[in-house]
Image (cartoon, rainbow, N blue to C red; front, top):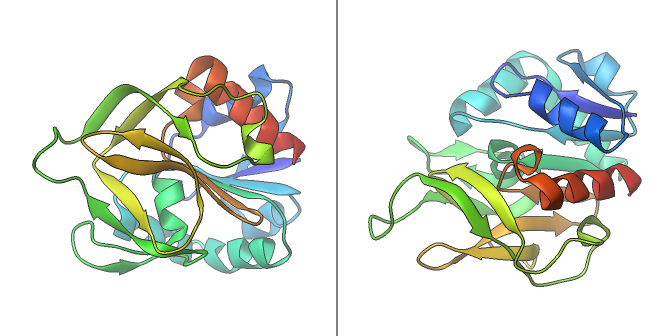
Length: 198
């Protein structure tokens, strides 16, 4: 069973419906004890990094997420959820993240239009169970103003927006997708299906 983490700052039903579309059951909860029983966890999210981390702590979800990852169970961060997997963010200050992936979250430069909204392509860089049957140059849907700068080799795919930034990442059992797979049609649904089968 897949647990979708509700930390009161995310669009959860659309992610749940996307899993249902590929024949996978997922439940939504903000109760650590319930989520701890899940085989896989999904950390979606929209909003501000600092507030998201505060909510995870206030709701008692952060220790449960850390235990899940330490047990080498699959964890998937989506959009803001992917950014939370990194060491820290400079969104509206400096905030510590979950630090599963070494690196920082920084704002797009003024040389590109911010936020980055709409369809853009992914360029596959490494093989992974998450990428099975995902086609090179697939179009996916983005909405974000900040991006990850990894300090270790975790990038599975990049996207060009004035420069190349990581759009899919992985370190062992921890996965991250910067775009919205639930809004990305065929490629997005394939990614969620693949995650459910890892």
